[in-house]
Length: 293
View (cartoon, rainbow, N blue to C red):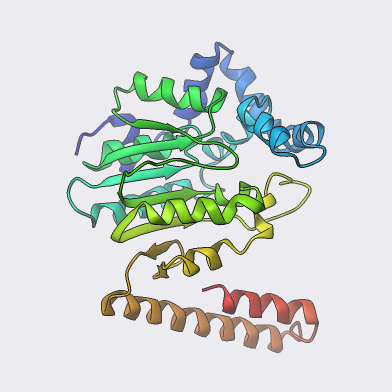
């Protein structure tokens, strides 16, 4: 492994994302922190001002020339415990360490580049980053150069991504698929899955919350996990799908389903005991969890 004290998995310094942005944007650190902490209000308002008709151009403008949304995507790094960043990054790296010694890894929707840097300095894999060109894309590139990380950058768009004939051992989507424009979701998934090698892994962290607080989560109108299944991926745990139908993978899928069924019925019994499961919304919630495989 290459190693870097800033990205040591046992002592991750998430605040470096914010301090790096301060240097990159030439803004006072205290001003950046204030903007990040208020972004959960300002970014949704920015979406409403920019994206009025849900057109491709409006959405492209929002992501390529953001003002407050830039700070919003840094909020998890100021509140890593709330967003479980340490646990999530550690789980992803553990999964990648089980792959071939020097595999090819793509992060689609890499944002600040933090996960790519953590992967680069905690594995020997070749790492690629894909996102929409703009301020956030430029910030990630600036960080890769600062830390001498040889990470390939791939420009994407709101309607397509071209990966050429590149093949990956792993594709990672961390809180990005919910941002896809619904009519293009199928195409994105097809390209990403087709770029996976046989037995490759697809790591999907997906925030299904759709509310006024997250107006950019327009992709929640699409059954993303259903698209992954329809493209030949088999789910083996909460965040990992595998491009294989080998007996071993199918057994892992069965174990995952069994665990999920038991958990769903456990929830149902608790609600029945508390007399909370008699309403249609409560039952629907349990059934949706059960069928989300």
